[in-house]
Length: 315
Ligand SMILES: Nc1ncnc2c1ncn2[C@@H]1O[C@H](COP(=O)(O)OP(=O)(O)OP(=O)(O)O)[C@@H](O)[C@H]1O
Ligand SMILES: [Mg+2]
Image (cartoon, rainbow, N blue to C red; front, top):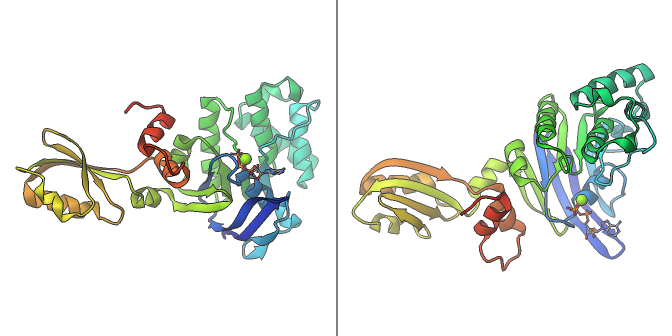
C-alpha cells in the first residue's frame, strides 16, 4: 500500500516551508525527492517521520494515519547527521537497532550484516569520530536501516559518498524497493536520480511542481527531439506540424524539436511520406533539463545550456 500525504503545510514562524503538499508513493518503487535548496525537502521528510507536526494535513500508510507506533518500522537518515561521536561503530548500530525494538542478539547480527554490506565490517571497534566523512555517512545509513524498515526515508544519502559507495548504496536501495519497501530519498545528483529512480517528486517553494514516472515526465516535457535521416528535397513536409522546429541540419540528418502534445511518430510518418528515412531516433530531455524547466529561474538564458553545464558535458 502506498504512503499518502494529504495537503500538508508547515511554516517556521512566518516562513512558509510547505504550502499544501499532496502525493502518494507506491511501495516497490524508488522515488527521488528533488528540488532546489530551501524548497522544503527536509521539512517534508521531518514531517513524514514525525520530527515535526504539520500545521495542517496528514500522512497515511496502508490507509491509516501514521503514528509513533507505525514509525517504529520506518528508517530515517536526517540531513543533519546524528551520531554519537564517542561511541564505537558496532555499538552505535546496535544501539539504534535496540531503539527500534530489536533484541540485543538480533541487533548485533543485523549490525554485522549491514556494516559488511556497507564495506565497514573491519570498523566495528573504531570510534565514530575517528571515521572519515564518507564512512560516517555509511554508518549513519546503517543506523537508519538496521531494523529492516518497511518505509525508508533518506535525506541526501549520496552526498559525500565515493563512486563505489554510491554504486553499492544504489544497488541496496533498489533491492529494498524491489522487496516491497517504500523508499524515498532526496538528492541533488540528478544524473544519479535519473538512472536510479522510477518515480520522482519535485518540490519548489513548498509546492509540488512535478511528480510521476520519470520516463513519462521526460516524454511529456518540452524539449523532446526527433533525429531523422531523411532524403527529401526540402523541409516543406514539416509545415504540417505546427510548432515543430528544425534545431540543426547536417546533410540529410535533421534534428527537430517537437512541441508538447505532438506525437513524434506522426512526425516520422510525415517524413516518410516526403522521402526515404534511413535512420531516426528520439531524444528525451535529461532530468537536469526537466529540473531547470520546472524550477529554474524564469529568465534563464537557455535551459539546455545550463543543463549541459550541470551535467559537465560540452555542447
Ligand atoms: N529550523 C528552521 N527555522 C526557520 N526556517 C527554517 C528552518 N529549517 C528550514 N527553514 C526554512 O524552510 C524552508 C525549507 O527548508 P528545507 O530545509 O526544508 O529545504 P530543503 O529543500 O531541504 O533544502 P536543501 O536542498 O538546502 O537541503 C527554507 O526557506 C528554510 O530556510
Ligand atoms: Mg534539505
